[in-house]
Image (cartoon, rainbow over all chains, first blue to last red):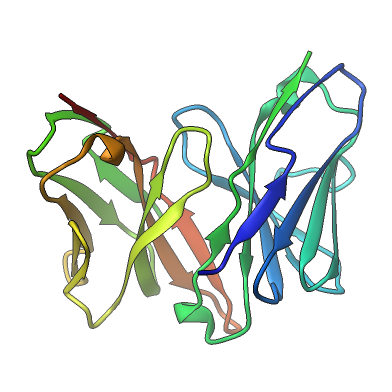
Length: 118
Length: 115
């Protein structure tokens, strides 16, 4: 089945550091990729949607200069958390969707990245 | 406001027993409903997907039902196993003007299966 690989799985770094998270679709072309954030025992919250070759669309309240998204190819999207602070600590999950009818095309999720800012 | 509510919030059952998880939604216009299983520290994995015209969908020991009139869905797990311990998330897809769709996630039911 379709596989989405997310790397790294865990990051621990000092406040002020910028952190890049990669999301790769391994066996399909991901025309659209999504980035979510999940707090403990809470539901996934969509941060932004990116289509290959175009700028990402950010959800209300998400700072685009803080969370930089690049979707340069049909198999790779990156999320960079710039100048990360402790409040940015969270579980970040990407998902990807391939070509096809939108309503029936499933999103395939990565295994998430646990980001801890000290 | 588009919402997806799940119950119970958490559930503990003995191995081998059955259980049913509930999902109520107010998302409109409705496209489809999915149940996902999320193990701790992992991403969600799709279990079932149902469109408006489907009432029941099975995937092994998982059976999902959908009542589009009452906007309710359930996920029934039979003969539970220890590996079923996870968070089960109900996700409803909304049709957007212009042809896109948007997912609304429930907060999940945390299931623990014990010996």
